[in-house]
Length: 364
Ligand code: 5GP
Ligand code: MN
Image (cartoon, rainbow, N blue to C red; front, side):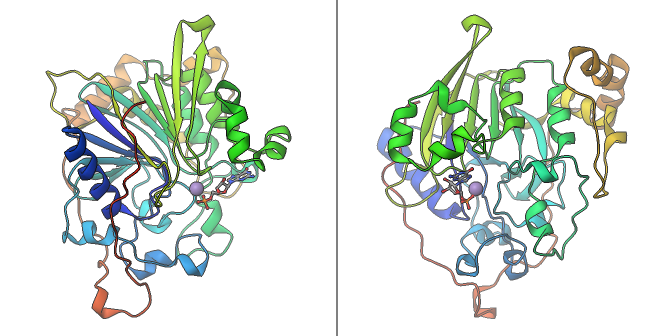
């Protein structure tokens, strides 16, 4: 299955799809799935723009609203996680994930989905220690503080992901996992981004919870964004018995390495469509009582195997979940929940004309 990976989208959906089309024509291929690693900016209208944590100069409507309004249709199934620039009010409507526009699926704060036998897990947001233990207390309209804390990852999401016992093919986060630079060409990385050195040494760079997830889940592929450069790494687990191919990509700008197409084996007897993950649904069910919407700190058990098994769903719980969902096919039930932007009704957010980028690569 041909999967296109995008680093940070920054609302440039039209450009990304045009770029994929350009590559498809050039290489004579068809892309089956697009995965976007955050800073997606699903702004439906001007109100959503103001829920994003960005300086005023970035209050551009970009092109997501065209897909939301139905003016354009996403040409390829698109799955994304959130980063630190998001229409957080809109994403908060879908904490467990869902369609933000036809054919464009948000994975939620954390989520696992299957596409033709490929199991994809992801976590939205970035790590900031001071908010990690808090409940999900933010509500729009946001204050300057909650506009930022709303996209900080929480321990419940990593805790839930750590309950997964079956193998993961692809893991996606916006942040890089801490220490990942030790598994790739660090010299070249520092040549390109010399100012990372201090933050690497003081352990400020990257996400420790994502590093724990990488090491525990040992996915075959790990994709990330946020640090605005391309970086590949190979992590060998358990003396090389399992490996993770890591790839971070840049943001969608001219002359930047923001998109990559890769071929990942899928089950050809299955249709390329979204399916819920039974184990994940059962984990959501068995940990539902741990949800907090208070700002107070929320302590969860650690990651030792003994504690883990207390929260791993049993067969009875899986059965309950399966009955609820009948089958695991994700329904195409996108519904608009707010008016979409109409360019002539407004003089604030302006729309820039997109053009395809010509520099992405097609090998991993
Ligand atoms: P964003 O698009 O999310 O606003 O910006 C991310 C930018 O911040 C990138 O240029 C990235 O390199 C930089 N950045 C993010 N986290 C860190 C960090 O921990 N240390 C340093 N030095 N730069 C960071
Ligand atoms: Mn970012």
